[in-house]
Image (cartoon, rainbow, N blue to C red; front, top):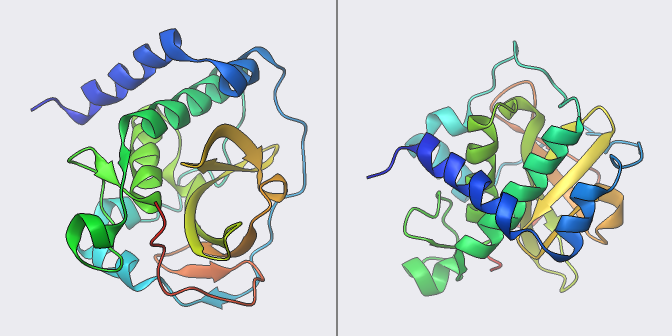
Length: 208
């Protein structure tokens, strides 16, 4: 079995050859304009499936306060982020947990190449950590999507604002450009969740 680092390097090498469309245009453009960050507003109840995930993948949920709380965006870092987002979106086959595992919601790392929304984002975070980005600045986030359903994305907290990695698009957008209602995300200070002000709080993120 290939090591995680080998897989990460493979994703990045393929990305250098395979970027097209909006994601490719983003690599050629200047860094995104600075924008306001999302503001946490108190504690929030964790997703149940996240708690079970953390029992199996404790290192993926751990918070290291010594890590930077924000990613300094450079052209190289921005290109890496776009590349990983695109490659994972293309590599993982979307399938709901109910279809895949027979349960409403299960979080894992898409080890078999199949996953739903949170599995895409967890794999992206693992690859970006292996590429040198701080896990503390990459927070799993629950939103209400365009269908009115619970959906998981990955928030990258940067020195230019908060940007979203999403399996529904290979464009990396500022959080306020997504059209989603932001509900809650993992805390940067401890193994817990914080509210982002959304009223409705889904108990699952079962979207493809």
